[in-house]
Length: 226
Image (cartoon, rainbow, N blue to C red; front, side, top):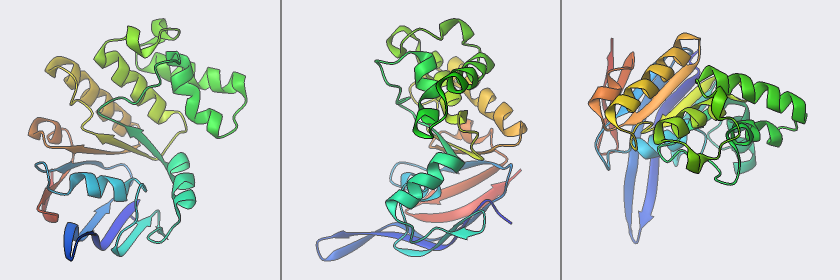
């Protein structure tokens, strides 16, 4: 059973009297443990597909299954619950809270799940050390380099032990050397059994994936499996 499946999924926006298909009849299966790149130029439908796969939105038409469960018509609160338990997000802009320390940022998702404070700190510390930032736990994001911030964001994405890591242009704000380290980190996470999905317009990033989904004008043009 695929961990994620899209069946004839379309996302349509009304523009006056017209309809714009941001995504058009997409069919996609992502298996547990896959490393998938959603690849295409700006305006191809990548962000729309990411929002649907990441349970941030629901389709206008078609059905989406997460671990066999049809989530196509879930409410926002139902989607939020699923996101919190199943999906970890890594964003291009890091999305770290500047007023919090590295430790507090990484532990934050556990706060929302009601995990006791000592357990939160213990778990967050372990993840911070796993990305090589044990010496930076009490620093704030403004005191870190871009690469360090992205490693913190990656650690935070893993805090709730999600089955899926969804990374949106994860190296977009980084130099090439640092970006390579981030991609190697995501590859290591995948090799430990996590399903990793990256959204990118960069072919060098897509090359890290075992499966590349090519998008153009809201349609899945082809899939390439290595």
